Amino acid sequence: METLEAIRTRRSVRQFTGEPLSEQQMETLLQAGMYAPSAHDRRPWVFVTSTRAEVLEQLAAQARWWKMLPQAGTAILVCADMTKGEKVKDEMHLSGCNAAIQNILLAAHDMGLGAVWLGVCEGSDMEPPVRQIFHLPDHIRVVGMVAVGHPACAPQQPAERVDFSLWHKEQW
Ligand SMILES: Cc1cc2nc3c(=O)[nH]c(=O)nc-3n(C[C@H](O)[C@H](O)[C@H](O)COP(=O)(O)O)c2cc1C
Image 1 (cartoon, rainbow, N blue to C red):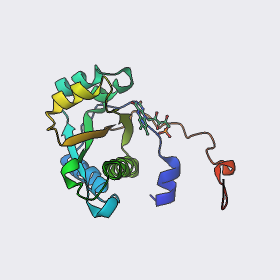
Image 2: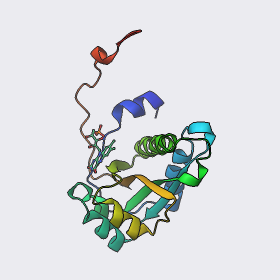
Image 3: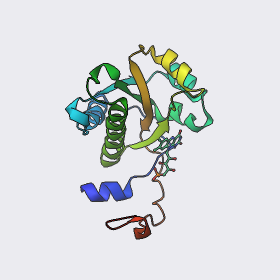
Image 4: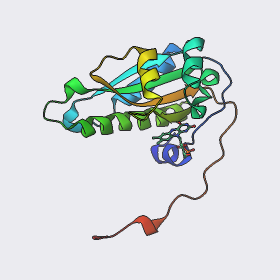
């Protein structure tokens, strides 16, 4: 798939067949994440994946927006390793990890898979159980999660999103 076409046609997928991903597919998705840009090329991302039904059920129980996880079959937690932060502000690391998430979403779309970004706000009620479920050490910050699997149906294409009134030339 051409890059611009992938960007234009990617949609969040929340219904899945339940068919598991292959190891090769998982590797391709994580590789895509690892090709993201990062401040000072520090590559702060760390990925924790789970395909275990009981873990996905536990995660799904944390937020009503995460209910698709068991059906998706795979959760990818994207985290930032803050020990890579010497001379780099923490926010920069988080930005790099967000770029990794977007790469994963686009790669999934290109591969004919379905995926949805799941926000895990730091300081929210969801963060402590997520940290506990995945046994995250203190120097690891949670950035976001991706539910990924085989789509049960093709998602609707978005209504027109292009709005050039959002474009300020030279000044606000
Ligand atoms: C930071 C962030 C957090 C999100 N969290 C969730 C979530 O918890 N559950 C969910 O179903 N979708 C979540 N989404 C997906 C958005 O709902 C989705 O991107 C938006 O509705 C636009 O639809 P599209 O992705 O199909 O273009 C999140 C997206 C972002 C960027």
